[in-house]
Image 1 (cartoon, rainbow, N blue to C red):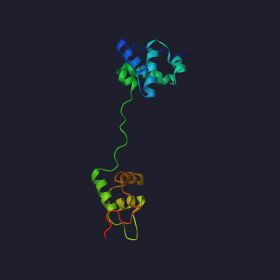
Image 2 (cartoon, rainbow, N blue to C red):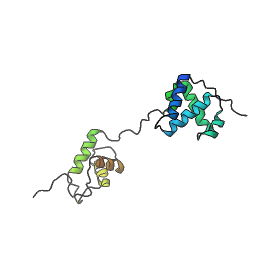
Image 3 (cartoon, rainbow, N blue to C red):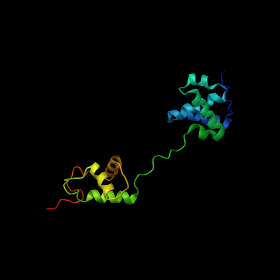
Image 4 (spheres, one colour):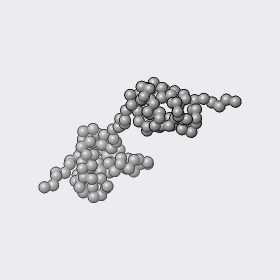
Length: 158
């Protein structure tokens, strides 16, 4: 048994806006495809038929229609901002790590390595735990390459 067609009433103002998005300049492909799908839904065409014309699944097309019904044009075309991953280190922890890297490496080591920085930071209780990739990104953002220098913090004298 086929699903009943999703009935979407798109206002004239929104239809103008959709046509502007479709015929306008540079837009994200997904936004244009959603606009095309919404225009087709407004004409009363069923989602599977629309899916045969544009590269979206019928489920994605129905979702666009539902988002339009519940949240309007903005909600139907554009995605919500994603929060991203939380910061692993706070500013004071970052500063302590950088200070440690700028000091001399531990006894018996000629230079700091990313792995050594991560291990020493936990051993010295500067941070509860930290991964090598976090350390690598932190050092990269401060343009530090301790594995190249025997003493990062000290300048050459003489």
